[in-house]
Image (tube, rainbow, N blue to C red):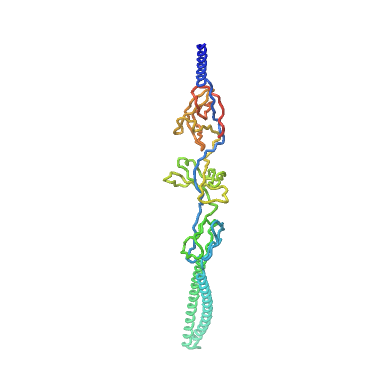
Length: 385
C-alpha cells in the first residue's frame, strides 16, 4: 500500500517537472511588440529663465536734484512719457537770458540794416553831387577845390556803406551765435525731464525724490516687453540640430500645467565654456500677461517630425552604445535577436530603429524571463506612451 502511494507521488512529481520544462522551453510566451508611430516629434529639452532682450538703465544727462517721479515698478509707459524731473529753475533762467540775448541781436541787425540803408542814400547823394561838380569844373563853372571836395565826400560815403555792410554781417553772426546758445540752453533744460525712450515696462526704481543726482546716474530700469523671451541652456551634444525658427514649448515654473508656444529666435554664437551648454533664445508666440523676469522655465524644442518611425524603449535594448544595440524580434511566430542601428532618441527614452530589421520582423518592447531564440510567442501590441 505504501509502495503504491510513493509511486503515485513520484508520478505526480515527474509530471510537474515535465510541465515545468514544457512551460520554460516549449510553451509559447507572451510578448509585447512595437507598432509604427506616426508624426513623431523629435525634441530637445533644456532649462532656462525668462529674460528681456532689450533692457535699459535710464537717467538724466545732467546733474541736479530729483523733484518729481512719475513712474513706479510694474508701470507700462509709452514712448516719450515723462518718468521724472529735476529742479530746473536755474536752467530756466539761463534759457530766458539766452532768449533775451537773441532778441537783442535781432534788434542790432535791424539797426545795422537801417544804418546801411542811410549810408547807401548818403553815398548816392554824394555821388550825384560829385558828378555834377566834375562836369562844372570842365566848363570852369566851379572851382577845382569844390570838385575835389565833392569827390572826397563821395569816397567817404562809400566807406560808410562798406562799414554799415560790415555791421550787418556782424549782427547776423551775433544772431546765429545767440540762436545756437538759446538752442543749447533749451536742450539742457529738456535734459531736466526724463522720458521713456521706447514703449517700456518699469522693472526697477532706483532713486527717490530729493536725491542729488550726478549726470548719467540711473533712476529707472526699463525693459521692452515685446522682447521678453525664454533663454534656454541646451547641452552641446543635443543642440546640433536646432535651427532658428524651430517650434518650441515653454513651461513656466509658476504654471507647470500650461505650455506656451514659441519659436527659436536666436542661437548665440558663443557657448558656455564651463557647462558646455549653448544659449538658445525662445520667443513667445503670445507673451503671458503676468510674466516674471528670471523665472525658471522648461524648454522643449522640436527639431523635426518623423512621418513614421518604429520606436523601442531603451530598457528593451541589449548592449546599447554608439547608436547600436541588440533587440528581441518576433519572426514567423518565434523569437530572434537582431543587431540594429538607431536614429533619433526621444525624450521619453525610446529609440528610432533606423536599420537592421527584416521587413516582417516585429520588435519586442519589454524584456521578461523566458525569452529564448526560437521560442514560440504570443504577440500583443505595446500600449501607446
